[in-house]
Image (cartoon, rainbow, N blue to C red; front, top):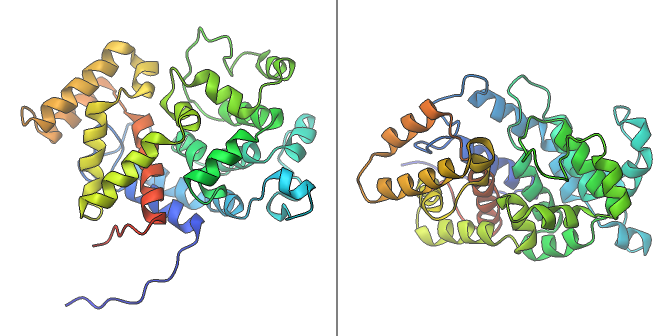
Length: 309
């Protein structure tokens, strides 16, 4: 019989890192890096490395207090005091003025220390406000109070990754005029997410109150299972929601095919292993759903779900 030690109360940072670990260490999670297979250029170890390297940014998110509260004198922003030596000096004022955007930039920068490319950019867009807000309700308030500097640092963070974006978009982060356009239009980070929400399910989470995150967490909680519920809920979500990362990378037809074929797996017409092999052969990676999976696991853990049952 296994001895059970009393469980300590984990910090929000530890819960977030646990969520990231559980997502990537799943079995039979079609199309994503997991314990069963790597990609040619990104391995399980790259994801695990990023989880470790994200600690400081996630911990700072846990200790974050909005700048409005700070300016009212009701709390401090010790986690964002001072500037890191590596910050681009021309954006000094933005780093001093930003909150959520700076935390996102730090998380992306800190995890950009290996050759595995982008591993958790979308996850950080969800986890940072969810940690800072102590859950969904607080996150919804915080994101409404982001400013232009938050948007600028989000664009800088985007530039550190290889994340793909619709090339025809007039708010393309790779455009030399992008940050100037942000300032000219006075767009906050919430505004940027709202603008992108029609074609990006991570941005849509900011606008719709983290609806899919909530739905994923609820599905885990009511499953009556531990970590084995994660790939089951993931596959069900894939059958119900078009992954916008797949659409951006390979087009709308690939997005529809992914959703429809996931339904075939649920109906027993194809095995999960077969589905995964086709994904790998076609280079299909449902990455946005993986990010929502992480956020959903985090909220479930925050609300008492036991992954280790």
